[in-house]
Image 1: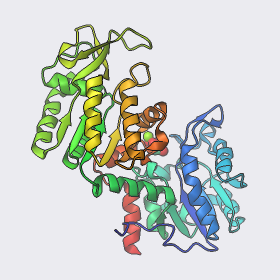
Image 2 (image 1 turned 180 degrees about the vertical axis):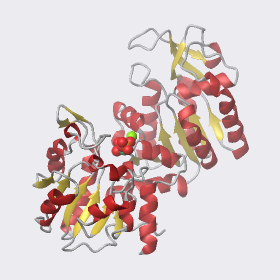
Image 3 (image 1 turned 135 degrees about the horizontal axis):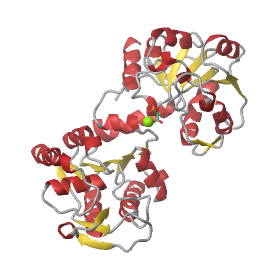
Image 4 (image 1 turned 90 degrees about the horizontal axis):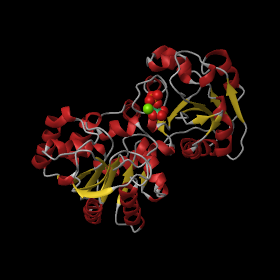
Length: 403
Ligand code: 3PG
Ligand code: MG
C-alpha cells in the first residue's frame, strides 16, 4: 500500500540543508534529561540524512513558555542529543530565527548538525504564523517532520512550514504512522482495544471512535467504575463520575449497536484507601462495600481479558487498568501487559500502545520493548484514537499530493 506521505527515501537531500522538526520536549530535572526515549528515536532520522549528504538543522519546542524564557532553553538537551548521535558535535543557535540562526546555519557543512533554540520563544510558532514559518523555512531547503508527538498542534514549524518547502516524514514519524495505520486503518481482525485511566469524561470521543472500529473493547481503571455505576452497580467510595452515567449508558448501547463486545470488570481489588501496602480484598463487582474503593481489576477480569487477547490479532492499548503507581494495585495492569508481551513475542498479536501513563505502566511491568509499537506521544496518540485529523499528519499528506 503506498504511504500517504513522502519519506526520507523519496527526497533528494545531497548537499542541502534539511530542517528537521523534532519533539525534544523531554523530561529534564536539575538540568539533565531524565528520559531520552524521544531523542533516541530521533537519532536514526538525523543519521540517515547525514549519510545522504545533508546538513541537518534540528528544531523543537520545549515546555510551554510565554515568550523567551531562559528556564525553558533547549540547551540542556544538547548533551543527550549529542550522546544519541554517537558523540557528534552539535552547533547551537541562541535563537531559532533571525541573525543567530542564520549565522549557525550558514556555517553548517554537509554531515554537520545544528540545534535551534526553543521555537515557542516566538509567539508566531503557536499562532501558525506564515511569516514565522517563512523565517524558519529560510534556514533550509527541505523540511522533515519527525515529531509525531507534536502532530496534534497546528503550529508554524509543523503546519505552515510544510507548505513552503518539500516535506517528508522522518523515520520515527514514518514508523509511528505505519504502526497506527496497521492497528486501526487496515488491521488484522479481530481487533481489540484496552482502555483505562481515571475518567470517562476525558475519553468520551475516544471511546465512541474506538467502539466503531474494534471488535472487542475491554475497559479498566477508574473509568470502568463509572460504567458499572451507570448500570446500577454499587461502587462504594471508588473514583466515579456520577454525572457521566447517561453518557456511560449511551456508550454501552453504542457498543451493542456496533457489534463491539464490551468487557467490563466482573471482579475488583478493593481497599479502604489508596495507599501502598494497605489490606486489600478481592470481591465481585456486585459486592463492593460502602467504605471500599475499587483500585484494580480482579483476577477473573484479568482472565477474561487474557482470553480475549488470545483470540485477538491486533491490540490498541491506552490507559492503565488500575492504580498502577501504588502497589499492589499494579497487578492487573502488569498481568495483562505480560500477556500482551508474550502474545506479541510469539507472533500472535500486533500490539500498539500509547499515552503517558500507559508507557509508564508498561515500563513498570518491564515489557516496554516487547510490544509491536509503543508510542511516545501523549496528546497526539489520544487525538489519533479519537479519529481526529492531526495537523502535522495532514500537512505531510498535502505535501505528498503536491509532489
Ligand atoms: C508532548 O510532550 O505531549 C508534546 O511535546 C506536545 O507538547 P504540548 O502539549 O505542550 O503541545
Ligand atoms: Mg502534552
